[in-house]
Image (cartoon, rainbow, N blue to C red; front, side):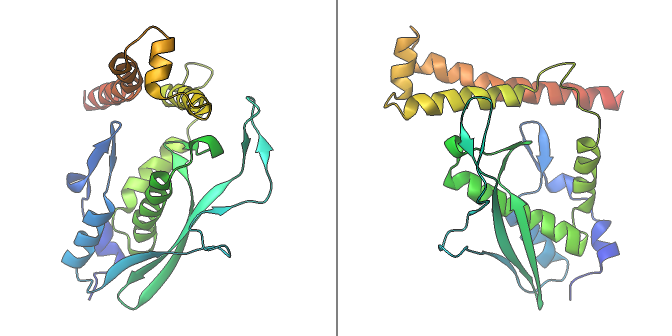
Length: 211
């Protein structure tokens, strides 16, 4: 039998977390393992589909951003099964703190949204890993620092949107690099620097909090 909400919430899941872009996250598979280790006999989630048979739910209302890109709001919906209990979770498709737009949507991002939704649903309904999300909500509730500095991951997102736009014009990454007088490896290295700098800044924040 699965332990109570209070018992599961007291479990320190941070030692089971990996770092993604400098931020700790609990992998969906490890989340299932922890539930089994704490009394659950059956744990899984099932993607739900819309009337067209797609696991990607979207609004009918389109909107256009400052770069004339047309977008809609995208979400995924899953059914979480824990023993005899069934829970429904619906979550936006996000790239970090940013909503995924039409020109950067992919199956991987849809899958990531469902996995994130599962781990968050487990936290809400069972208490396992709840403090991870509590910390994230507190961070989201802080005043925006956009007037002080630019979010490097938002800059990265804009760059990738431009690359995707060029891809749609039949320009491969190698073609883009050649047009810029660079090698493909040099261009890939530039693109990787965004995540490296983002993780570096987060590591600095961790050091500051430890002192």
